[in-house]
Image (cartoon, rainbow over all chains, first blue to last red; front, side, top):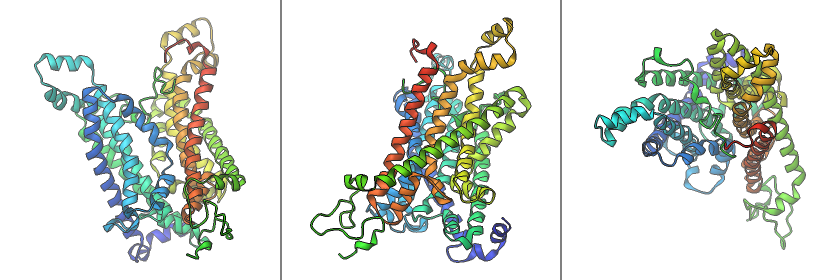
Amino acid sequence: MIGAIEFLLDGESWTRNNGLLEQLVQQLLLTVTALVLAVLVGLPIALVLGHLGRGGLLAINISNIGRAVPTFALLAVLVRLEWPGNDPFGPYGRAGLATLLALLFFALPPIITQAYVGVREVDAGVREAARGMGMSGPQLFWRVELPLAMPLVMSGVRLALVQVWATATIAALVGGPGLGNVIQLGFANLDRRSEGIGGAILVALIALVLELLAALAQRATSPVPSAARTPNSDQMSMLPPTVKPADDPVG
Amino acid sequence: MAVTLLVAGAPAVVSATEEKCYSVDVNAWICGDYWVDRQDEIIEATTTHIQITVAAVLLGLVIAFPLALIARGVPRLESSVLGLSTAIYTVPSLALLPLLVPLTGLTKTTVVIGLGLYCLTILVRAILDGLRSVPDDIREAAVGIGYSSTRLLLRVELPLALPVMMAGLRVATVSTVALTTIGTVVSEGGLGYLIADGQSTEFNAELFAGAVLCVALALTLDLLLVLAQRLATPWRRGLTS
């Protein structure tokens, strides 16, 4: 443990070629890119489906499918397939494209599911009232449904961020970029164990910081004042929407 | 193409006339011969995988139950309990498992503890939600006919909370099956070994077997839990759920 902290405090371990700094920047870049792509692709789909009230089964079950696919296996297959994605990809490094694709695969389900549920859960009475006031479909969506769905939309993004950061760490196990390299290298060689633990500490700390930033963003974008919220509404998203007494997806 | 030895996992000597589909030259993804020839290895990896998954989920349940009861009984502690379990969940598995190594070493125990901790977020919340889904008048009726709080919990609240709790248990189990593969970094990851070995030795059939079995195992365990739930809640059978 002491060795791990010494490793983290040593400037040399950060600045050397393929050191902590390089890998950290790489992994942050991967995470941000994948998250932005997932939001750009997933959010419009989910919001439109939610507004129209269609494709609910797909939107909700997509999360369950994503959960059953092991990250490690998907990454390994993507890297083994013979396609250009395994070549170094700009600042994203070795297998950068394959990694981005896997990150996208794991980022989309929470974003789609939460945003869909968020729009669907807008109270029918509120919707009718807005219609009664003469709002058109788009107006209803932009002025009523979207603001009310924002907490859940953002919780989906938040879940995706956690998921993407975790997946980006695993990429190193299959020769990909990111801080997982420090961990893997540390556990592959007995005399570098403390470096592996140091890398794990760093990855864990950054995960917590990212989660905190995402929680703040969620708070900032929610139109409902925090006092009006139930104590749990911030975190209710940890369970998928299927976890409700009347909802049995298989039976 | 004299590269026979490059694939460490494949047999070094392959007869020229009858090449197996997992030989270096073919290196097929889907290869029946591989499943037959390596069945011992495959069965062992699958068994280990099931052991780790089941142990981790059980550990998660054992820790989650008292935590959920505390969170329910002492409302002031609820946000701390939920916050702590969420914080653990935030840490990537590839970081959490190495962080446990100084405490428990390179053993299966490390993997089981790490994955058990991961289950907490889902399980604590599911148990809490389940208990809260029991209608108040049912609870009052039970108290009214003289049930003690222990009996109320065991005979009334837990059975009625079961559907919600089982939904959480299913989620926890499926994600634990997938996460177990990461255990291969610190000690044993069951099918994760096949994936890691298949990837590093460029042995497609092995990698494919690990991946497919992992998904199949997740679906099987999920199905078993659904069946168990049916059996455990006979009063719900008539309901359209």
